[in-house]
Length: 395
Image (cartoon, rainbow, N blue to C red; front, side, top):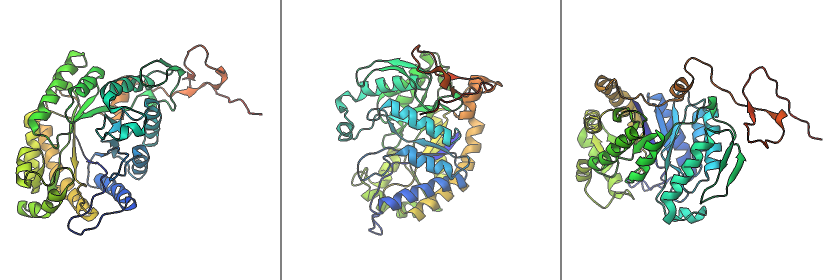
């Protein structure tokens, strides 16, 4: 099981101090939060992708590369990579580069995004969001697995003899999660390719996420990738922790009440009862998180949202201390004792390399500059380590 945190990159007024942080302050803070996550023993840090205020994460690969450069074992990933408004060629290039510079400590979560104004900013039509997501991912999937791609679709110009560079590290594509709040078609897409499915599991009752995950598991098995138990599932969640339950409610209440997403609706107590939001002591967070396993069975990744709604950096860092020191060690031990031997391990680059090559060395693509123009459709790469590649001089 991998444990981590994710951020939606909101810039929200702190209702207690009345201060709204600047973009610079929030960007610096989220890097420090990711570093703290590794320090306290978490496995994963994820950031969303947004192109509109009040969010700052318009370039997640740049941010994640900076975090990877200042950490040693943390897996960096996205909480959403917009497959609809990003060109799949650009996604293939940027995330393969992130894979290289992080030494494989990355993956990504594909999603449609639901912010309507963003679509026309990038030349897309939100009314075509679902077919656009399906087509774009089909292309991305191929770009990471074929050295030369001929492709024609409905929503972008055709490709002929195209090679995405750099090729994936070790010629093993980054692991892809498909994230959804409510769309079974995205679960179907994840199952078709044998990828992971991440249920947001924040705003909705657990019963809603269960329907999506059960559907994904059934379709994963249907497409022959393994049994239902071997499907790769991730869950979101929210937590606010204090030593005493009453302190947690008192401290978090003003942030909950003023939060742009769920403020001014159900009470904090009702929302905590109806959704996966957990506010309380470390033991209460442990107990509620274990109910996720009771409901969904074995799953591979649990991410918590902890830096939202205007919470100041100091508070978030204190939350991570409690999470890493008192909650996660207990959850790791308990969930490991419950693990079905048939269920899959959490995905890592090392595991994917091992699955592809066994004990053999991984392929390391090398551009074959002596070939000249690639007019035959053959791979423009040669793989032998003992062939010296010379590049023509430019006069």
